[in-house]
Image (tube, rainbow, N blue to C red):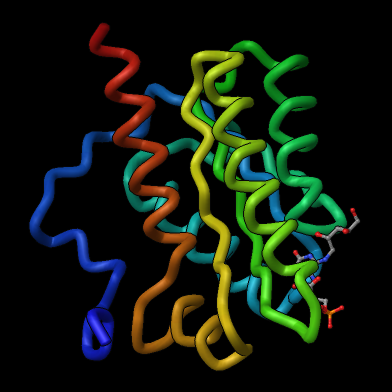
Length: 163
Ligand SMILES: Nc1c(NC[C@H](O)[C@H](O)[C@H](O)CO)[nH]c(=O)[nH]c1=O
Ligand SMILES: CC(=O)[C@@H](O)COP(=O)(O)O
C-alpha cells in the first residue's frame, strides 16, 4: 500500500507562505463528527500556526459532506473578501452505492464552486472504507487531512495574490 508507513501531512519538504494577509472560510460537515471535529481542529491549528489571524477565519457547519458544495457557494456569494474556502468532511463506505454518489457530487461540486468564483475551494474530505482509515487520517498515523487542507489553502491564497 503506497501510504502504508507515510505521514501524509508531512510538509517539511515545502515552504509555506505566511497566511497573515488572507481570510479563510472553513465549512465542516457534521456527519462523523468525531472525525470532522479532528479535521477542523487540525485545520484551525495549522492556519493559526502559519500567521492567520483568528478574526480572519469564519467557520460554519453543514449537515453532511453533500452540503459542503452549498456551504462553499453560499459563503462565497456573500463574502467576496474570503480568499479561500476549506471544505472538511468524512464519507465512510456503507452497504450501498450512496457513498459513491456523495463522494462524486462533493468533489465535482466544490470544484465547480471554486471555478465559478475564481477562489480556491479545498477538498478536505476523507473518503474511506471504514472508520479506522478515517481515524488514521484525522490525527492518526497517516496525519491529519485538516492540516493538509489548511496548508493548501494558504498556498493557493498566496498563489492568487501573486497574479
Ligand atoms: N453517509 C454519510 C453522509 N451522508 C449524508 C449526506 O452527506 C447528506 O447530508 C444527505 O444525503 C442529505 O443531503 N454524509 C457524510 O458526510 N458522511 C457520510 O458517511
Ligand atoms: C456514505 C453513506 O451515505 C453511507 O454511510 C450510508 O450507508 P448505507 O450505504 O449503508 O446506506
